[in-house]
Image 1 (cartoon, helix red, strand yellow):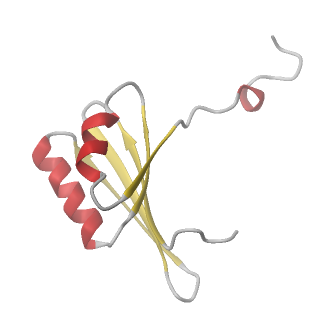
Image 2 (image 1 turned 90 degrees about the vertical axis):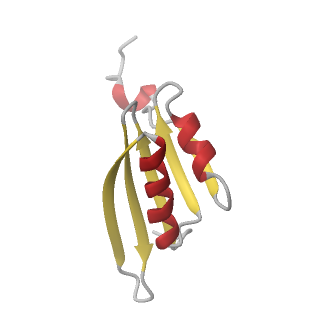
Length: 100
């Protein structure tokens, strides 16, 4: 698989937590992966922002149910590309053939 972003993060935002994984591709092609869970209170989101900046993360994909993503997005978007994604599977991948 072709690497598009050498340093990126994925966030799964819930009401009280934001589970965050960063992936960093090394020069030899190996990938370092780190996962941390942060609370969604302001001080904790600032710590998340600091952690992402300390790893020079500029691209973030964020998945969330409802509106929980908004404060996280607002705090992290400065100087980064933050992409809000829908992780819901396509109907064809979850519905048995012939089911209606």
